[in-house]
Image (tube, rainbow, N blue to C red; front, side, top):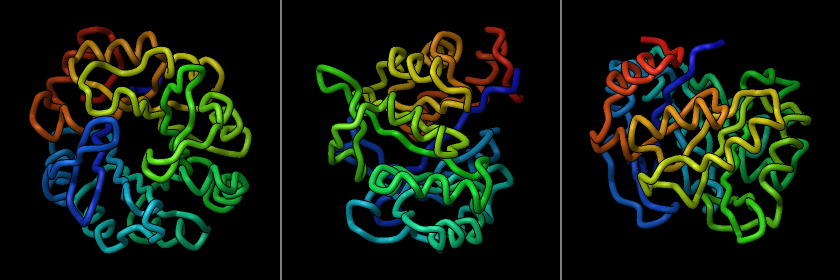
Length: 251
């Protein structure tokens, strides 16, 4: 079994790391370059940088920021936000990213997943799915979680894999920033239906939350922000705990 990855997420607004609850009530969480540098030193396996307002504001990702972050780390960097073409993706990768993440553009034009995968390889393509339960099913949301699509998030995940996605970053909007634990049902349902890695996101706080989503939810990686940004849990301590619980992690 491959080692489970622990991934801090840097949500970016106006060049700063921000974090909120249920994708709203954002508050400042520091400088992204400094944060990336610290996480790199603490043993994070990857870093995800998401320009959370790029799609809703109709603009491109902050390329210069990507370059600055990439220079400070020696672990894989995934970048998302405002990527809607092969040229956008190429520029992000040339800025130092190892993978690109697409959400809004992929739902609006699913063919972009196939184009990206064919051009850069599926290992570079992460499809981000922001899901919220609408009382009937898990609905996929776009534009930083501000707009529902009517699409079933599970069915969309299956389609994304068929189109060439190499990974899925699956975020529960309902659990985001709540510190109540990951959405086990959401992650488990999708992980059973696809054969590519699922990065579980939204709600991780206690070490037990991370263990559960890996062991029971089938996640290949876990992504978190609040718990790391504000020092509630350190990556080295989390890895030691998971190792003791029999989870294969890099220490």
